[in-house]
Each structure stands twice: as C-alpha cells, then as structure tokens.
Amino acid sequence: MTRSSSPRAIVVGGSLGGLLAATTLRAAGWSVDVFERSPSALDSRGGGIVLQPDVLDAFRFAGVAHGSALGVRSGDRIYLDAADRVVHRSFMPQTQTSWNMLYGAMRSALPSGTVHAGERLVSFREAVGTVTALFESGRLETGDLLVGADGARSAVRGQLLPGHAPRYAGYVAWRGLVPEKEVATSVANRLGQAFVFQQGPDHLLLEYLVPGEDGATAEGARRRNWVWYRPLDRESLARLLTARDGSVHALALPPGLAKDGDVAALRRDALALLSPSLRALVLATEAPFVQAIVDLSVPRMRFGATVLIGDAAFVPRPHTAGSTAKAAANALSLAQALRVGAQGPAEDRLARWEAQQLALGRSMSAAGIGMGNRIMGLDR
Ligand SMILES: Cc1cc2nc3c(=O)[nH]c(=O)nc-3n(C[C@H](O)[C@H](O)[C@H](O)COP(=O)(O)OP(=O)(O)OC[C@H]3O[C@@H](n4cnc5c(N)ncnc54)[C@H](O)[C@@H]3O)c2cc1C
Image (tube, rainbow, N blue to C red):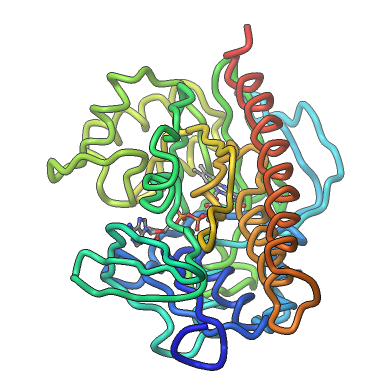
C-alpha cells in the first residue's frame, strides 16, 4: 500500500471508462485519481448511447445519483424506405441516453480534485506491488493499481502490447444531434418516439431521441441523434480526418472540425440517398462529426498491477450498442474483485476477472464484426 490506509488506483483516461473505474473503485474502498490528457472538460463530446443494464448496475454499486430519468424511452423499432414509408416495425423497448448525461452524473459523484486534466501519460513502470506513472508534465504518480482507460489508441496498451492497434473496418460513422425544437413537425410526426433505421445497399442510418444537452428529457427539450454508416476507402479516410485547421486526426473528428467540402458532400449524399425525414435531420445538423469504425482485441487485460478496460482493451463495432456497457462491466467487476476486505488471494480474483472480461470482449467483438459486415455488404 502507498501513502494512505486505502490502496491507491491511478486511472489513465477521464472519459466514460475512466470515470466508471473511478466511481466503482472508490465504492470498493480505494483511493482514486484520474489523469486525463485533455486540458478542458470533456462535456462537448455529445453522441447518443443506448442505456444498458450494466451501466445502471455500476451506478448503483458506486452510488452515482441521477434524476429519475437517465434517458428517453423508445418502444418500436421501425425501418423506413427511401420514400419515408414504414417497411418493418417491431416492438423492442429501450432507453437512450447521451455521453454528456453519463459523464455529468459521474463527474458530480466524484470529489473535486479527483480528475486531473491536462495530464498525458507517457510511460509507466512497475516495482514489486506498486506502479509508477510518468506524465508529459513531468509529474510522477505511484499507486497499487494502474487502470488503462485511455481508449482505442491507449498509451498504456501501447507499452504492454505494442503490436495491438485498432484496424480500420472500411467504413465510417457520420453523426449529428439536432435539438428537437429545430425539427419540422412533419418530420417529428414521421419519426415519433421510435428507434428509426433506413438500410441501403451499403449504408445504414439510425436515429433516436436522447436527452437535451442539459439532460432534459421533457418533450421539446430533447435532441434527435443520428448515426450514418458509410463506406470509405483508406485514402479518402486520411483526407477526411484532416481537419479544417489542417490538424490530422487518427480515428475521429469532433464536432466543428470537418472541412466545409466534406460537410457539403455529406449533405449532397443525404439528398440522394436518404428518406425525406432522415435527410431533413442531416441537413439541419449544424456540426456533423465523424468516427472511423475500427476493430481492436487484446489477448490479455491484466499485467501485474496494471489492467486495461473499455476501449483500451476491446473496441466492438458500435452496432452492438454495448461498448459503454462493456466498460461498465469491466469496471464494476474489477472493483468487486479488488474490494477492500475481499476474501482470498487478490491474484486469483484478478485472474477470474480477466478470464470473464476477455470472454465478454471477444464475444462482443465477434458479434459486432458479423453485424457490421452484413449491414455494409462487406461479407459478400
Ligand atoms: C459511432 C459510434 C457510436 C457509438 N455508440 C455507442 C452506443 O450506442 N452505446 C455504447 O455503449 N457505446 C457506443 N459507442 C462507444 C463508446 O463511446 C465507448 O466505447 C465508451 O465511451 C468507452 O470509452 P472509453 O472511456 O474506454 O474510451 P474513450 O472514450 O476513447 O476515452 C479515452 C480517454 O482517455 C484519454 N487519453 C487517451 N490517451 C491518454 C493518455 N496518454 N493520457 C491520459 N489520457 C489519455 C482520452 O483523451 C479520452 O478522454 C459508440 C462509438 C462510436 C464510434
């Protein structure tokens, strides 16, 4: 143990995976510090997320408070054709939330001073029973556990498994959010409260309601979230991920950074390919953003006193709608395995944690690859 009576965890990455680890480990008796490379709050990342039970389990364990509604309910799933006709309908109720909502709930649950912004991990080293992290600022932090929650391009994984990097799957997801009050009544009536899809020969758009930016779930205060999967070759991807200010991005462009020409091309394609109501959403989106779809799997998640969780370990394709739930399951089961006062050797509990979470990551990755290749016609 280091520095205090509680064991200390150093969490690298302050997005959803990192905050899930921080909140659950604290509830398990650990002292936790989170180090996030971004200097500012991450609250503008936006994006809708399907709320899965694992996230609620982690929130319950960690005592993360949230208003009664953590999201917006949908009942039917409907498929539209290019003329806005419903060609398929099934009843599949679920709740949609947003990245901001989950992030905000967890940030509020952590004592101030827990998250250290503007700290980029450069490397780390292990000694017997402790691990020391070195940050770009020159800061050194020593703990009993290092949690790599630093996403698909994880620096923690880069040091442990240098050969394992995300592999581009051949398509991207354009995404956008439109405040409900900016959507024409005819479009709102067509889309309703459903989880809406339009499947083309090699593209898929899906749309659903999520809370407003301030978390509001009342009618009129919510946002319509859309995701449009489009094929794109590697060379075009490199051009697309070069932002309007010339900066080059590896996997995604945040809102506001896509070049005018790329946004204009997106809008032209929307006019040509999408049904009238879905096209209206794309055209109404002020700052569409884009993410490359990638595959990533690791053979191990535990290396002495260091573990990998969330997207740092496995990036399932987003069709599984389960990556945040996977990060929650990784974090909650880690906290349960390492709960202060738990019986039996920690080594055995961690070994069981790793075996279960590797199995979860592998099955979710395989399911996502199957779904994605089928949707995009890449299996033909
Ligand atoms: C198109 C699309 C749709 C999606 N839809 C869904 C959905 O419906 N449901 C769902 O569950 N999930 C969805 N996801 C995935 C989901 O967003 C993530 O899986 C989830 O948020 C967990 O991410 P993470 O925290 O592990 O990694 P990230 O969100 O990538 O966070 C990693 C953090 O680490 C920081 N970092 C990186 N390197 C360093 C370093 N060296 N030092 C310090 N900090 C560092 C980064 O700045 C970042 O804040 C979707 C993803 C995509 C691409």
